[in-house]
Length: 327
Image (cartoon, rainbow, N blue to C red; front, side, top):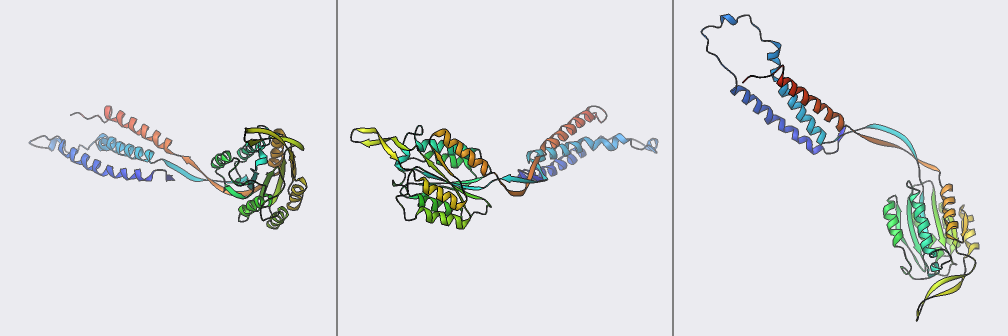
């Protein structure tokens, strides 16, 4: 047994002055009689009630001690359970280039990708998940963490213009791999989402894919956007105007990255399709990989509180009946 607030146990020292006060008070209230002779009392032994006259005070001391123990919050930690949890280490690599403003996914590709990724994170509470964003360059927005509240907040803050524009798929994948290299998990996964072709960065996508294969990291690739011309808002001297542009998702490269690393490739042409893809990835990555002992704490203060209440009631009953004192 241990205590959540053990410092409160020092209050038990207050019992010492309380005992001293009782002894001093008892010595001052003893009655005395002057008798010529005590022969008439020879052979008379004190009754059991005389020996029990200090029992109510003892009950009070025990009650006070139990109240202090209740305040200190006793807990049992002797309950251990062998459990298995489902969890892997995942890095979400998210393209935030300007083409992700295209509105073939509503309200646009980036917002749709963020919403679906957020639901994916919420549905996997046992995983360590990180977030890498890339455009013309890449950086880690959130390292691997199981604090999904922080992860979701940081994902919500991702927006266009955070880094130089462009599409550095190889660099984004390499940054994600670097986040997983030192992971102790038996299962490590990158989910790479992009809507373009590699046109920036010092690392080619196939070079990054080869590195992932060497590290034993699976890469699931998602190409976002419809084929053909798609609407995209553009800044002009006359304000934001809608223009059409050719969707240039480099699916052959994404397919090869997935094949090399043992992952799967997907194409999302609308928000519903993207949600189904994440659901499919979620179902694939459900292996049990962690087995550990977990200690479960059990609160014990309630039983001490009940004992305290019982002792107080017994003390009050004895003081007013069988062990009642007459002044």
